[in-house]
Amino acid sequence: MPVESIFPRLEALLPKVQKPIQYVGGELNSTVKDWDSADVRWALMYPDAYEVGLPNQGVAILYEILNELPGTLAERTYAVWPDLEALMRAEGVPQFTVDAHRPVRAFDVFGVSFSTELGYTNLLTALDLAGIPLRAADRGEDDPIVLAGGHAAFNPEPVADFLDAAVLGDGEQIAIAISEVVREWKAEGRPGGRDELLMRLAESGGVYVPKFYDVDYHPDGRIKRVAPNRPDVPWRVHKHTVMDLDEWPYPKKPLVPLAETVHERFSVEIFRGCTRGCRFCQAGMITRPVRERSITTIGAMVENGIKESGFNEVGLLSLSSADHSEIGDVAKGLADRYEGTNTSLSLPSTRVDAFNIDLANEFSRNGRRSGLTFAPEGGSERMRKVINKMVTEEDLIRTVTTAYSQGWRQVKLYFMCGLPTETDEDVLGIADLAKKVIKAGREATGSRDIRCTVSIGGFVPKPHTPFQWAGQADHETVDRRLKALRDALRGDKEYGRAIGYRYHDGKPSIVEGLLSRGDRRVGAVIRAVWEDGGRFDGWSEHFSYERWMAAAERCGVDVGWYTTREREENEVLPWDHLDAGLDREWLWQDWQDAVSGGEVEDCRWTPCYDCGVCPTMGTEIQIGPTGRKLLPLTVV
Ligand code: SF4
Image 1 (cartoon, rainbow, N blue to C red):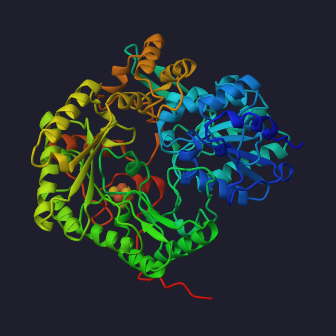
Image 2 (cartoon, protein in one colour):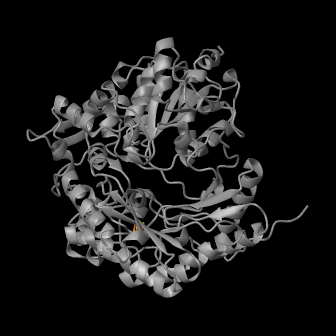
Image 3 (cartoon, helix red, strand yellow):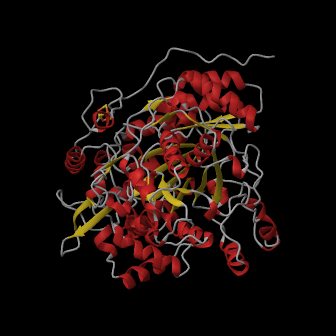
């Protein structure tokens, strides 16, 4: 049975909302397949506004891979802004996909990609607008399987009540495998209903189905144990790792947005994973090991992506792009190839060394010289040791001196506040560092036209990192340190005017901390916030700390217990049954080393130090060099 488009009903509402174009679809390279040509249908959601969601690589890659599968279709849906939400409620218009404006409830799988926990309330809005019961336990045979992925899915417990399933790690292969399980189950006439479908997914070991696990608690509130409540369900669910990225050169047909979005460029992921061992970095820990794309695949993807999209900017993405074993050749090859064209190249540069400036020089051959960004993360040498970010003050000063003397005028430095063991002096060290940067720049150039922007984010301890046991700094402490830093920067007559300062207050980090390390009991708070009007919590203009605190109090949830409390080694953590491959003992030892000043090297260039990932997951570090070079484009 064809499913009708809701567009005629939506169209009548669009003149009354802001940025209506974000809801109309029809982007270049979007796909609309015939409904009846497919027997497995996915609605893919990025739970934020279109302008943030459309450039998301994870959703874009799955969208393409699933649509390439015969008998499978995938469409996209995004969070609607509150103005449209109100009209949709008034007129009974359901959550829709932007591709064919089909109602989300008509799909078999509703896949949601969470990069951040602050998108949880937007999931509830989408479910409610779609007419899908919020609680997985209340869903019936006609409701889609609600499946979460993305980094936040490594601890999906706070949203466990609202999810049917979650997948950890790389999505390419598991999305295809899930499609096959759904296809077979439907072809057999849906035996056993959605319960059996979920059981088949859970038995595979690659899909976490929260309802098949019971959580018991100690009287003091700590978790006693998490155990499967069915015999064939594994005790631990493992993450997925794609081992040969060259075999998955997606996106091949990049989506070109109609409305304005946060990034308008073609992005190529040049490697996945990071083994630098920064202790605060969840992305680095959960995506191990490093797997590089070869220089030739990168070159082919760039050429094809530009041709298919018409974008004139290419971004080379990864967690630390300058670490690709052939990045020098990639940069030079692409800069040579596109010299004199209107294609510009960008590389998010965060590593603090002169090599990064050589790369930036290559990349700016054909475009603007925007600012350079470096991320020392910690304001003092001591702090950087604790977080295992091995950057000395001399490294930083040498690097920025090179940048300024080669003509760069603006350098951005990124730091965090609220790190474990941090003192007021560590944060004030950021001011000293920034002043030294300006002083070095002035000396190197003989000019006062030098700027440095200090940007500070609040630290949130994350699951599957050595800091998963740490007590988070309370927001009063973070705010006090940030204010003292601001005063130290602004009050400096010699350098203050050359230093920009960007920071947010510490309150959103506390809510993020609650959601990151929360357990199933936090779900009630998310629901209460949503019922109280909570939407778009990642946006400062929508976020309300007071709303979250009031909801937590109503639900009897002690926010401090989840955030500022330090955990002991043997405490069962809500995500211990979800396996990112990292050995728990290694993580604990690394947490102890952090406090005592021990450092770890990058296992790409030093012997394996047994973090556990490779043997557990059957993976290995996969890096070049291949020794190949990029050829110039052939003129046809
Ligand atoms: S198991 Fe060894 S080689 Fe693999 S990521 Fe961990 S430390 Fe590196």
